[in-house]
Image (tube, rainbow, N blue to C red; front, side, top):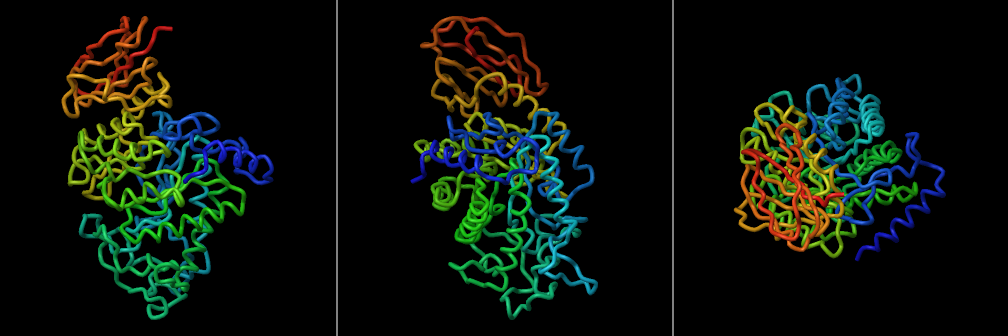
Length: 485
C-alpha cells in the first residue's frame, strides 16, 4: 500500500526546509513538479495544479541543440509546458555520452563533455520556461540495429554504432561481457536475449557492463536532480523483463534519497493492450513507480481508446496516480500512426478521460510520420486545449459520460464536477443531451471552435433540465456549461 499522500507531502516539506541543496534556478527548492494532493490524478508545479500539454520535433531534444531555444519558445507561446527527452544518440549529429578516442574507439571511463553540456542546457532552458521534461533513461532503439525495417533511413545509428558494443570500446570484449557485436532489429513485445537488458542482479548479474550503466545513470542524476521540472521514465516502450526497469527505479530512488530529493518515476511497456497482465502489473506496482505512462494506448482508436483509459482509471480509483501520455501517435501512415485527425482526437480524449498529460509524438524520421510534433496543427490544438481548460477547474472534475444521453459511439465526451461545471468534447460535430437536471439556477453555455482556437459568444440558459448540445458546425468542438457568476 502507498503511504497517504498528505504524509508524503509533509516529509517532502521537511526535507526541503532543512536541505542546503536545491535546483539551479532562482525560484528555490519549493518550485517542483509533484503529485497534486487534492486530486492525485494530476500534477502540481510551483504549488499550483498544472495540466501538461506539449509536442516537439524530436524526442531527444537535448541532442539537437540547433534552434532549441526557439523551439521551446514556440511551444511555450502555444500554451505548451511538457516535452519528452530520451537520452538517445542515434540520429545524425547526435553525441554519445562517452569519449571517443583518436583510434576511433570509445572509453566508457571518460565522458563526452558536449553530450552532457547539451543535456544541462536543455534543463536550464526548460526550467526558465516552466516546461516539464519527462526523461527516458533507456531507449531500446539505441541498442538494436534500427535502420531498414521501419524506414528510419541509413543515417540512423543503432547498436552497430553504440559505445556499449564491445567492438567499439576499449573497456571489455565480447567474451568478457557476453554482448554480441551484432544485434538484430527490435520487433518483439516479449523479452529479447540482448544481454544489455539482462545485466541487473535478478537477471544475469553482469557487473562488467552494469558498472558503466550505473555510471551513466548517476551522471544523469548529477545534473537532473538540480532541476525542479523533471519526471523520470525508465524505458521507452520496453519489451524486456520488468525487473530491468524495477532495478533502475530502485537505483534512482536511492540516489535521490541520498540527496534528500524527491523523484517521480514510471516505466513504459510496449504493449498497447491495457487490460493485459503486463500492463496491469505495471499499473499496480506502486512499490517502484509513482505515475503511469499510458501513451501506448495511443495506438488505439475511437471509443476503444477512451474505454481503455477508463479501465486504467477504474483500477486505481481508490489510490490514484497521474496518467501521462508522453507521446500521441497520429501522422499519415502505418497502423501505429493512423490519421492526422485521429491523432488530434486522441489528444482531446486523453484530457477528457482525466489524464494528466498529453504530448504529440515527433513527426519523423524518414517515412515514419509518427505524430504531429510541434507542427502548426499541433500548436493549434495545444492552444485550444489550454484556452479551454484555463476557463474551468478541470482538476476538480471527473470523466462523466454517464451524464450524456442520445450519444453515439465516439460522438462526445464529458468531464464534469456535477452541479458545478460541465465540459463536453465532440470529435466531429454532433448533438447529445446533457443531464443537468439537479443543477438549478442560471447558467451559460460557451462553445469553442477548436480548429481556430476561438470562443463563440456565451449563451444564457436555465438549469434544472436536460440540455441539448448541438455543435455549431462540423469538425472538432468543445463546450463549457458553467453557472453564471
